[in-house]
Amino acid sequence: MEDFDFIEEPTSENKKQKYVLVSLIAATVVLAGALVYMWLQNSSTKDENSRLIAEYNLEKTLLTDEMMALKAELDTLHSDNTSLNSQLDSSRVEVQMLLDKITQTEATNRSKMRQYEKELGTLRDIMRSYVHQIDSLNDLNKKLTNEAAEARKAAATSRKQAEELTKTVETLTGKVSAGAMLKAYGLKAESFNKSDKATDRSSRVSYLVTSLTLGENDLAEKGPVMVYVRVKDPDGFLLVGETQRTFEYNGEMMSSSASREVDYQGAAVNMSIYLNDVAEYSKGIYTIEVYSDKALLGTTELMLR
Image 1 (cartoon, rainbow, N blue to C red):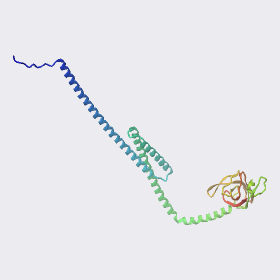
Image 2 (cartoon, one colour):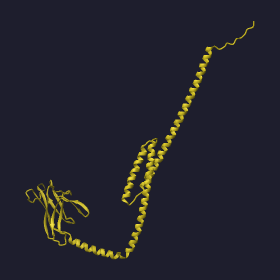
Image 3 (cartoon, rainbow, N blue to C red):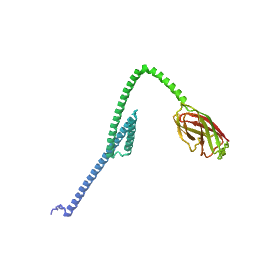
């Protein structure tokens, strides 16, 4: 008999194994595809985030540059108008504060950056109004300057007479003022102990007395007159007593050691001014200056040993 080859039919178990294998391969392929897709998506998201951050940083840099430019422009604006200068100073402070905020805020904080952009726009509008005001003031100043020049030109013909008249008045006024000025004589300073006896021993001195006479003067202003004494110790320090006051002399405020008010009616007045409440006196030369409300009446010295 002839031998026949028989093809073995796949069993049900083999079919099941092949099906499972195919399913695993398909699942692996799908999973691999999903992983690749997720990696590509993640890479794309990172690239997009990097692009956005770079864009936001650039916007922040540009905004900062605009603020710096606005600050520089404001620094160049000046006016002779006190009120306008005060407004300019206030705006410079606002610009600096906004610049600090921008610098300290993250570029990714979009709401804040949009807010700062609006504030920058408002400040820029305010600066334009300043420029307009300054230009208007400059035009007005030019107009007033021209008008003043015309006025000076119109008055040139009478200026010489006015100057001569002014000189005459000043001369007469000076003579009257000089004649009306109070003068003092007999100025002297003395030191006394607690028993009211004169002494030049510094360790025993209790108080100082400055005596003088206001001279007779019918042209002088009548009424109360304050007389101030300034006593400087040997080191140049001003001594201060219980009747110390401040007064003005040649436009400068000065402190006195002691003072006294007298009623001056044009006749000579003898007066003494006491300096009390000084803790101690040292050896050396003391300088005494006497002033009225309008003049230095005289100076003297006192030696203590």
